[in-house]
Image (tube, helix red, strand yellow):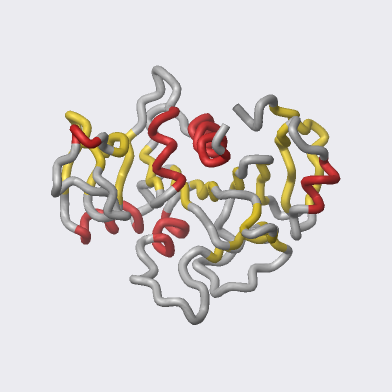
Length: 219
């Protein structure tokens, strides 16, 4: 199974009925495809939309309806559009229950780096800095490594998006909770061992007494 699909499926299990959820660009947007039946969620996009639906198929595209990453998306019957000031009023006012976003790096202290690599040109920092401070829960959804190197570190090396904001990390191999004691491994795929996971993780891992071994890569 595609690792990104594995991650998106697992993220969907964290979302609860009647929550207002913001999904970052890229991998997190796949989460809308795997929401469990009967779970009523409202998705927000920081470019000015609530009631956002799934990524649009070719025959569903409406040119002026896009998410914050420029992807064409659908809008639910109860959806609404508004300007950026209202959108960020929702975010900064603490009304977003969960934000799910990717990362270049995250560390065992809950620090997040996801907006720039020094020396590379980027269009801007986007809404991530506001979202991770304003949301009640922050989930980082990302591949465990990049080019063979761990993205989960003892301490971030890239410029930070925010300090101490991450609550949970979900990768294709594991689920980890960020706590005051450190990074607690709560779920691991049956496809790898704890020792193999430790080898691909730069951060120190605390193994939960109630560690769950999940079949078929967290699905």
